[in-house]
Length: 298
Image (cartoon, rainbow, N blue to C red; front, top):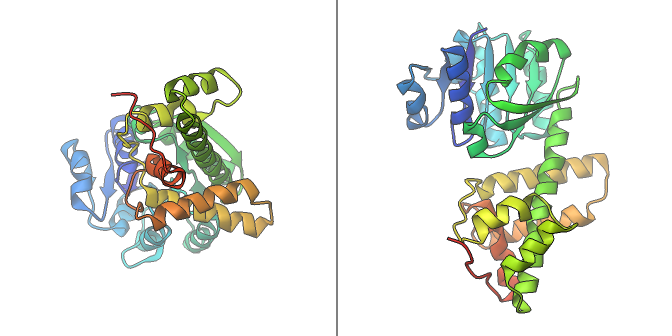
């Protein structure tokens, strides 16, 4: 099946490139023409609209940064609903169950099924074909798309036969990861303000029961060197946190701990960090503590 790809930003570009490398053909679109140039250099066909992608591909992938942009490429002017060849649509972004349900109904009216396949792992892992895909939707649809997913994924977790189930799993993964980052920052800043070398504190945490993804990788690699270059925009984090809150309220589940993480992210936005890197979330804690972590790594 011929593949198409919409949304070739920092995460979409390596995913699309891996599909192109495997399949030897691809049609792609991004609202920013320069974002598709690396694919054009590798002989991908570049479309002028999402509709053109859906007119020339059997399976269309989309990796969009926001809910509004997701709806625009599905049902907006020149959206994929106007294409004739597309047989399956695959969403790779974190858009929430409400947005996915709306798109699923719209696509079903044209006879096109959807696969819900949000990704996690970061930009470098995307380039290395090493990301994780959480997927849900009809088993038969997943079976058809799986070979294409394997072009960029190390792990694929099929979590259910309903579109939206993968969104829930991705959202709870995201809020867990964000909470790890916040508590890791609070812990290191507390110990450092108390006079303990943060590298020694970090070593103890990672050798003990407190270790998590933030203390093992995010903090040492992007905070201790004060580089703040995870390539994870804060505005995407804001969207993910908003989706967590929407789902928590919809399902009526407790929000005590994750709620504190949500409010920390809101503080970051209020501080003007919307365009900053996710790792700069530590600055919210530093500001409240009146203490800045020292640079301990190059």
